[in-house]
Image (cartoon, rainbow, N blue to C red; front, side, top):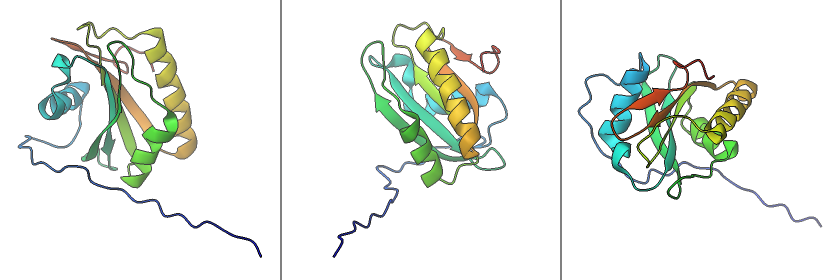
Length: 149
């Protein structure tokens, strides 16, 4: 006789909150940054946080997921965790985001490498990575606007 393990994958809501946002539809990197800052206030964090906005087919926000809490200058992120959250949220696309506690939102080589990898995995999975927003103290960088993805 063979023993078989049966698993079920479920999404668990860790916390719910209501935010009075003018529009939950993302039309520009500025819209995404405004929502990220309204909900998470990443520009003042002492450690890196990485997350995603999950979007439906009309670019309306389906969820906001913080996936990694890092150290002063790094947050470990694996595509498996990024796309697990996207799949469980029935996302058509995602916008990645993270902060730089140094205050300088300029992308590092690690940021560029991770973004390329996420774009490739997303293409295979049919979940488009629309942008990667890096938040600094007073400003942000959209990797898409900068032609980095």
